[in-house]
Amino acid sequence: MQPRLAVPADVPELIRLRAAALDALGVDPGPADAAWRQVARTWFLERVGDRPDVRCLVVGGAPGEPLLATGMAWVTYHLPGPLWTDGRRGYLDGIVTDAPARGRGHGRRIVDALVAWLGGVDIHYVQLHASPDGEPVYRAAGFTAGRYPGMDLVTTPAPPAPAAAPAPPAPPAPAG
Image 1 (tube, rainbow, N blue to C red):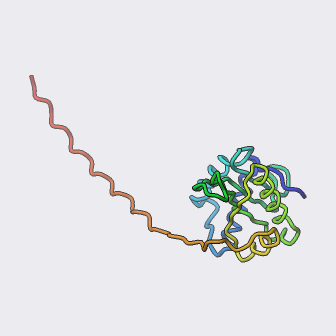
Image 2 (cartoon, rainbow, N blue to C red):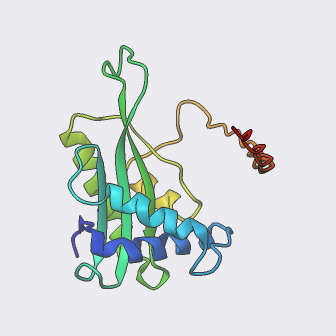
Image 3 (cartoon, one colour):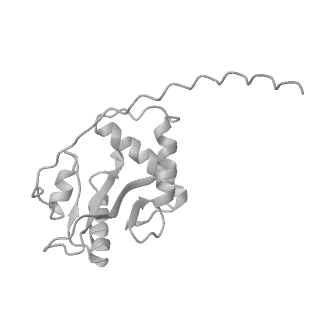
């Protein structure tokens, strides 16, 4: 099966596969009505289809049917330099194959198709973060350890501001 472009009808399956990926990484995706899923629905709807800077591919059934695998690529923008004069890079993310469909090359076909798409828009520096399960797929596709080690900073969001006390009622207008 060759990858195809995702369409809005695929969004529920994209969210299901995202939850499966999170679970495989040891992150509890929570219940079907978890708040992140509604955010993800909007996020995917804004990105599936034929955007010039994002490509979401899927392998599996017709739109709206169960998917076997998915993956995304998008263009990121960085400072220009001598090797990448326009500063554009590609980033691969969300590459996941449903557990029963693993070992059939779906992930590799998606990676190859996304890299080819990026090359077609003249992007030849592609980055990703690999899970232990995905690393062999990426290495087989030619990816190596990055030049610079990745670093993360996770901060604690500020607590919500307390609700303002209601304003006292206005004094009655003087009788005139």
